[in-house]
Amino acid sequence: MTLLKVLKQSVAAATLGCLVALSPASAEAEPLRVAFGDIPSVETLHLLIAFERAKEAGLELEVTYLKSEDIAAQAVVGGQADVGVGGPYSLIQKVRAPVRMFMQLSTLQMYPVVAADTYKGWKDLDGQEVAVHSRGSGTEAIMRLAAEKNGIKYSNISYIPGSEVRTGALLQGNVKATIVDASGKRILEAQAPGKFLYLPLDDLSATDEGLFANTDYMKENPEEVAILVEAILSTWREVAKDPSAVERLREKYKLLPDASPEMVAEIAPYFSEAAAAGMPLNGGGEEAVKDDFDFYTTSGALEGEAKDLKVEDFWDFGPLQAALAKLGQG
Image (tube, rainbow, N blue to C red; front, side, top):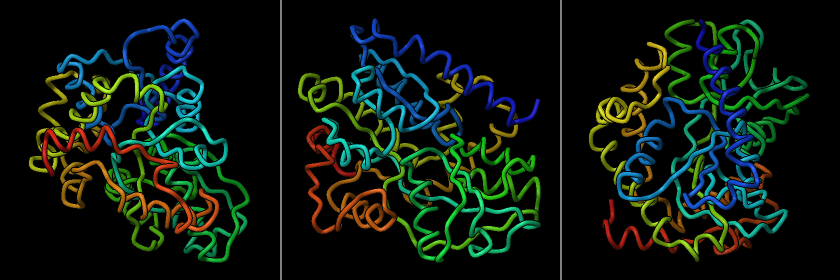
């Protein structure tokens, strides 16, 4: 079975599961409900570990995997979930949703890639289709910004959740232009050397993934949110210090049990590179948000001028500041 088929089956199973997990009856459930707009994968393994550690610390936690970040955000807005994973800047601004981000999980470290036999550079993508993670995601913002800077316009943007899925689609020839993470880049270089070209990007430091929640939930459940934030911070710091810990913790918690040998082989190099590039060991902060405003206004995901946007309209740093007061700076 190909990597792409395995991941497609995972997406299908997760989507089916969400019909039950996000039913009206679940709104009365006591556990903290996390809506995750992605599939379980190598790139999210450290977060899965943090979830397990939060459970060990006494947090009742349920995670539902959805097919896109915008669906996860809608679940939080609609009350079917308490916490979401993603970066709902556009949603917060456009619908004035009672949702705030409260922790940065990762910054943008992505690689636009094209099939070398079809395209040679950004100009060749004028009038062509590209694939990104999901609507409103950092990958979409990057590709839209690159189009603006290079004076081109795509014919269509398609949404394919999961860097591994997009990587597999490239290898099978189903996608000709997309954007992948470091793990996907290594797979492409190993399995098809010379077959793909990586298009240049300016340096990026904006938020890729973060945690967000309904403002009422954060006010009413500070202890639950604190446990989650502390589990993530401590896991991030351990991984940054010793990336090999991810492999050991994956086995301990029996995570990604259906991962292919190729996926397992990617764990060590992926987290070694992530640690070397720098992980957000303190969960972001006001300076990180200002970088987000600069990037997302330029890319068009946020309207207006960056200097006119107010941090408090998008973020609540209360949970993060409480966790840092307890754990110290990383």
